[in-house]
Image (tube, rainbow, N blue to C red; front, top):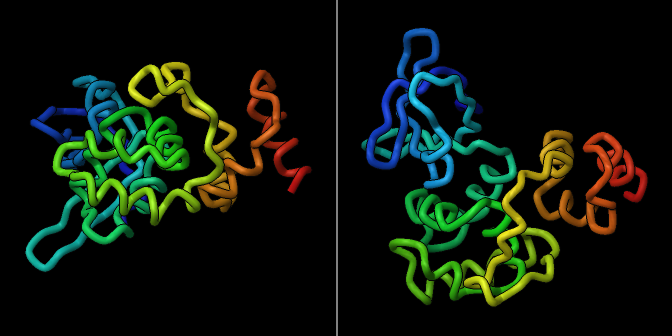
Length: 192
């Protein structure tokens, strides 16, 4: 299993990037946001999901561990394969997608390319209780808050310690967001 790749972006294809890791080029399929952030000739790190089928092997890459964990949850839903899951994650930042699922916003999920209304509703039914607690958000901006575009490093740290996405979200509920990452993690660990 390839857990992550770190190297220089040498090419950007339609929906993937080629990452050169010490002379070996890995083609990594990425969500739209990660594709936009990947700059040619810049060093980048992707947490990867290695998808193996009978006829092929593919790498799917994510700039955050939370996005990878959400991807892994999405592909457990019947009818959602890796491409559809990546399409859902391409809708917005992974925290915005997670929050939309937690809030039961199937209309938001159905906007993903290749994901219809039935699949979107199945994603909501199967995952709304697995992705963590919902954050109240403004529905006037296409069902998502524009202020939720930052990566929550405290959540990433808790997940690196073995917390699931849902448990990390629950642990950080009520912890002040203006504290340093270390202080937020410490407080989350104390409350659990």
